[in-house]
Image (cartoon, rainbow, N blue to C red):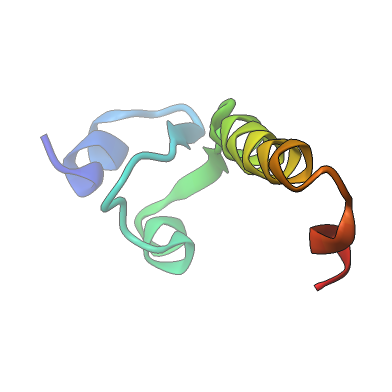
Amino acid sequence: MTSNQIVNSCSLPLNLLTVPNLPDFASLASLGVMRVSTGDFVFEKMMRNLSAIMKEIDENQNADSLFE
């Protein structure tokens, strides 16, 4: 089922959870989508980045990479 079909079949405000290849927010809004949630995807990405930063600090035994 497409986003457009879902919007047209629902009488309530429609909220979507973002997933890869979802249309851009303006396109979704034009279809009637009222809200797009990122779930915990932003948090998970931040944690992966933080883990990589902390690993680099541990491996280099300094925090110089924080200032590049």
